[in-house]
Amino acid sequence: MSNPITPAGPEPVVTDTDPIPAPGNRIPTPTATPPDILRCAYMEIVVTDLAASRKFYVEVLDLVVTEEDEHTVYLRSFEEFIHHNLVLRQGPVAAVAAFSYRLRSPEDLDRAVAFYTELGCRVERRAEGYVRGIGDSVRVEDPLGFPIEFFYDVEHVERLAWRYELYTPGALVRLDHFNQVTPDVPRAVAHMEDLGFRVTEDIQDEAGTTYAAWMRRKPTVHDTAMTGGDGPRMHHVAFATHEKHNIIAICDKLGALRMSDVIERGPGRHGVSNAFYLYIRDPDGHRIEIYTQDYYTGDPDNPVVTWDVHDNQRRDWWGNAVVPSWYTDASLVLDLDGEPKPVLSRTDDSELEVTIGADGFSYTRKGDEAQGFKLGNTL
Ligand SMILES: [Fe+2]
Image (cartoon, rainbow, N blue to C red; front, side, top):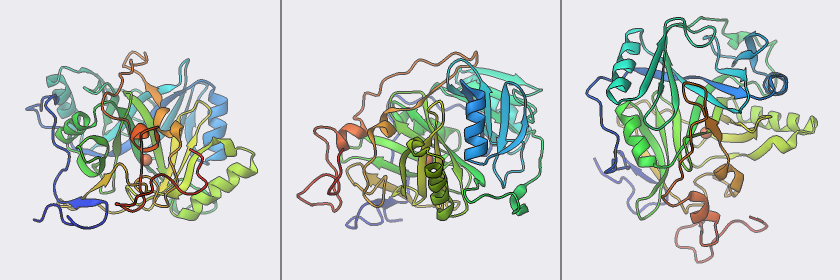
């Protein structure tokens, strides 16, 4: 009922409605019913050195190999029962071939075809699937330029949840979310809402510019987030651990392997999502987040949290600065022919510029005179 709920309270502002208005340039809403999406299920990424990537994901991050051949490795997390959560495919250009979602029923594939056909998107369907372990699948180039896959039919494999003899200290137990870079966040959000996603958190400024938004189907903070920037590109794919200490164990292991330079940001506690996090980069520069302990969002009136872009605790609750590469670097995405999609520039303000650029600022307490990051910060 009240909106906002905490008008005079501290940042962030909590509301019970979507705080991101649909823009004038919005993508039309199809009359077709959208497919019922259960969750983000897997990402297919192209890697330029399959052996190096296999070593990183299997020997360093301890993902489980379901199946592999000369060109492809199919990986899953410890609690997963479907064939895979990540596909590594050898190719000439490091990029993302598919962001794949599982649908509630086989009939939802027909809905996906109708939904995107009405939008004039390129739509393909393969009864035999695009990758091993997955049957009837639809792939589209969505109106935002991303290669999106939908499927229901999938091979079940052993859920290793109880196989504690296989666990390692940094075990990755679930795929948690994707994060996409797109130039116009409100336009992307309106489209994703047409597809059935709900916003759980977002970052705005006082002028109403939206810098990022988190959206969910499953009852967590997100299945995907839209990050404002030059796109379409893939910002990161995130795997969950059970506990915070598992993330620290991954950091310790990377140090022991003299691989601390793959740590890009963190470990830390997010403001947005409240999760504990770590960002690392794979041998091709694809960004992986290790993430744990966000919160339940499944009620229909789940409160939406809006953060001020100048709040220095929004992206790191402890006030540690976001490194510039985290804002600027991202992976290319491929069209359905396997060609990299052209990248369009963001024209709205950039979060990097308004927070750590020459004229940017951030605060720890709203109203503070002093601006900037913590003592000793060199950014
Ligand atoms: Fe993330």
